[in-house]
Amino acid sequence: MHESGAHWTASRNDMLDPRVNIGYKYITGLIQSPSTDRIHAARLDQATMIHWVVAFSRHGKLRLKKWFKTESQHDKQKLINEAITMILARKSGMCNVLEHRETKLVYRRYASLYFCCCIDFEDNELIVLEFIHRFVQILDDYFGNVCELDLVFGFQMAYIILDELVIDGEMQESSVKSVIGHIKKMSKEEMADEFQ
Image (cartoon, rainbow, N blue to C red; front, side, top):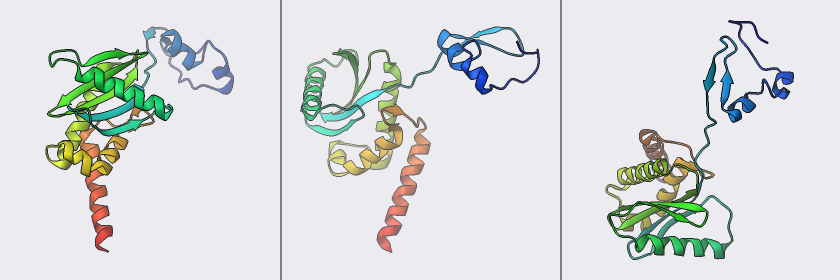
């Protein structure tokens, strides 16, 4: 089909041909290199979908919540209450991942605060545990050893940090340094605006 060693670019007709369509090749799990006739295994990377993120105290008081999936207000409250009840009932040595309805709850405890994410059933819970840890690292850097009161009185900044990490339920930024740099720059600009 293509000459060996020639660079290949997809034309509109090639994109319509399922034998050539790159998406088709990813879905079937095979990509054929045009310059060599070797077949490489490939997989379509799917982003982890976070349905919602909550932070709550060990007493069950909600301190932060962010939804990325549309639900009615009644369903949101019911889901959060069920999640908090299930997590608080667990012992300290138990797994940080639990199944809830058709999703998974991934949580982590830091001192008196629990951070919990609800993800799709097939998503990687270890990535979400790392996401939670990075979120807390950034909160610690900004607030200086974050505590429950920081989330109560500095909730705006907690939401801004969360928005730097997640957009529409998909993790966007994995670099702690990058997010901290953006937050510090934004704080400096905000302080400069206040003094003018």
